[in-house]
Image (tube, rainbow, N blue to C red; front, side):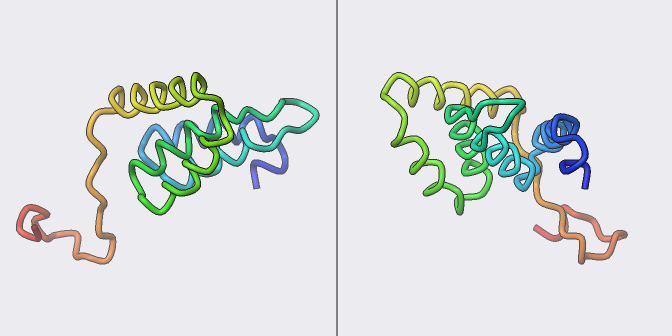
Length: 112
């Protein structure tokens, strides 16, 4: 809902959620950068970067990232891979997925 009213505010929300390893927000950022409009130009490098980061978390997006990367020249591909790698390293280890269906009073260590 926020995107239709103010896409730039939505991008900030997506960015904040992506910083917390939220894959749908990473994909939303990739889509936003893929599509230009009156207020911003499409940025295929940012699109590829977010898809590459999302593919690190969820392998289902690997083919999408690779298909966008192959449209970039070799130097741009290198920059995108470096940018994605730095982002991942800056965020540290990704958090374990939380099983929302499990009882809240269970010890998470005991479930492993």
